Structures are given as C-alpha cells and as structure tokens.
Image 1 (cartoon, rainbow, N blue to C red):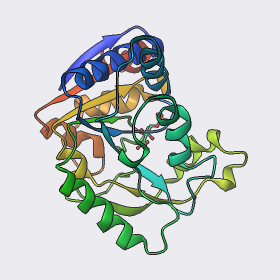
Image 2 (cartoon, helix red, strand yellow):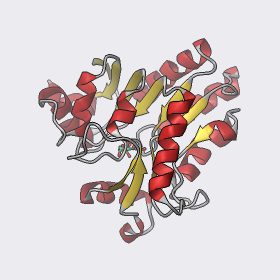
Image 3 (cartoon, helix red, strand yellow):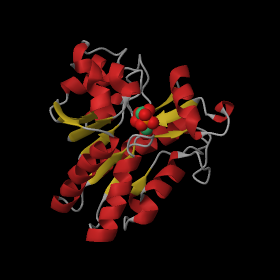
Image 4 (cartoon, rainbow, N blue to C red):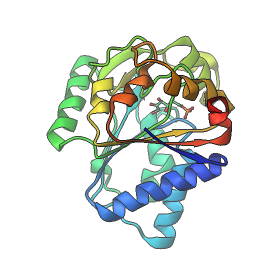
Length: 242
Ligand code: F6R
C-alpha cells in the first residue's frame, strides 16, 4: 500500500481529483468504482470544476457505485443514487445509462445482488475503485465479520455506522438498517484502489489498517493483500501512525 500524506481535507480532495482526472484522460473508457459519504464530496466538487474549466470528458466512462440503502428509491434525498446524481453525475457529461448503483427499491433483493454482480463481471470489472473507510474498518458496507469471499450482498448496518450516517438524515430513526453492497471479493477484483481518509475520527481506523493483522474483523485489512492500493490521508487521520 502506498501512502500519500497531505495537509488537510482540501488537499486530499485535490490530490484524489487529479489522480482520477489523469486516469480518465489516459483511459477515456475507464470503469470507475465510486463511493458516497462525506469523504469524496470534495473530490467530486473538484471533478466538476475541472469539467467546467478544462472539459475533461466522461462520455466513455462507466461507473459502478459501491452501495445503496435498502428501501430507498432513487428519488429519496438520502439514497445514494440521489447523492451521486447531485454530487457528480448531473454536472458532468457522463451518460446516465453508464452510471450503475444497486437498486434500493428492488422487490427481490437477492436477485438484485446477483444482477449487480453479474453486470459488473460482464462489463469486465473495475479499473479504479475509490474507497472511504468506516470508523470500524468497513469498506463499502462490509461490516466487521464479513467474509473476504463475499460478493454483492445484503447487509445489516452496524449500530456505529447507523450513528455515523445519521448526520445526513433529519432523524436518526430514518437511517435504514440494511444496505446492499459490493462484497469484499468484488472490491478486491478492482485493478487499482484509491482509499481516501480524512479527519481525526478516522485516525484509529487508519492506524489499525497499518498495524493489525489481515483479519475479517477489520474488513479494510484485506487491502494489504491487493497489489495496487494508494491511500491519500490527511494529517489528522495519520496522527496515530507517527
Ligand atoms: C460509501 C461507503 C462507505 C463510506 C464510509 C466512510 O459508499 O461505501 O464505506 O466510504 O462509511 O464514510 P464517510 O466518508 O462519510 O466517513
């Protein structure tokens, strides 16, 4: 794992955006795996600014997002489909039909998991996967204890994840308790992974990532088995590494 240390959230976002833009320019039909949450918002903002200023085109790009809440339609403001449309897709020239997110309003969720996994496999997989990390070490919504062999599946969100994500909802009770997420093995099949980590609240997770053995109780530890992982982390997040 290669660690790039940056000053703060703004610098992390800038570095990450530059990294993605460079890949898109060199590989205009790239498949990106994208994440939601607070961490990548600044990166997406810079991608939009760059699109407006420099015209980097996403017409040939395909996106597969990591996860979606069970029970929310794409019109629900808290759904990850809505988030991605608002934070990125509506502001660049990506074709909507090339943006894939698991359906939170599916009627048969097992079928939806299979459909998503097969679609991604048929498409040829992900070239560059962007990840955030949960305080408990989750990647995607793969909570501690998830098998490293897991593929796209339905998960129960950990109480700490529900608490952390309540900040996006009006009431904590509104946070869904289940999600559909790419599995650990799905994520690990990506050619390359870019993990973004910012803020004091992530310093314990980042320190565990570097110091703990690879084990299923700390899902992100699996990244140590991947041949091509870059981590961009800010000062506050790396505080416990020193
Ligand atoms: C989001 C996702 C999650 C987040 C993680 C960190 O699609 O899969 O793993 O990356 O929960 O969230 P933030 O960035 O809000 O701290």
